Length: 207
View 1 (cartoon, rainbow, N blue to C red):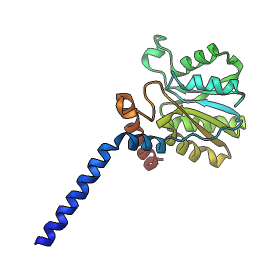
View 2 (view 1 turned 45 degrees about the vertical axis):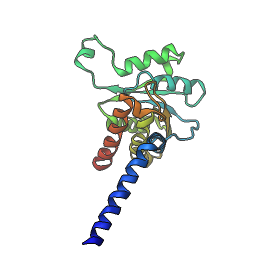
View 3 (view 1 turned 90 degrees about the vertical axis):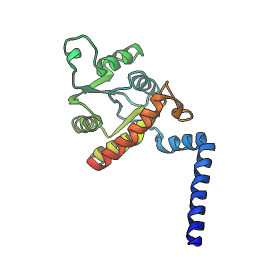
View 4 (view 1 turned 135 degrees about the vertical axis):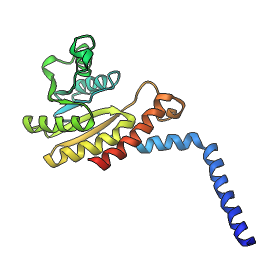
């Protein structure tokens, strides 16, 4: 009995030590977890830069920057399912906003394309890019997206586009509200990280 109590005591001591250590070093551990999660590929010249839905304050701006650097001659926007308010012309769609940003950033109108497929989620977006690549003959795309979104995007787009012979390069784009160094100190960062963990697991199981 005494031997069993000693083992239990040392087990609790070890767990307590780990908890205390994790608390003391929580900031570098959480920052390291974010860095390990985020993916950013070395970029080469591609056939198009893909602007996913959402992220109107980051993704189209980065697409414009890459375009002017000569990373690709075209920018491909997603075609989101219209909301009731956008159908009435009361609010713009993500594609409308992204196109306006690109035009303001001096991207020529003839360099901006919109997919024919209507999309509602990341899977739809990957399939829309697949269909566009088949029709256009594109062999490479660059996808700039938010830091925590990168891992799910690269897995999903590679899964759908690599069988077609299309190379996918995903670029990590920092958001304004938080960074990998302090994401746990911001509500948006906590929500974004936990959502992407759950969505990544869900996508791996479903697709």
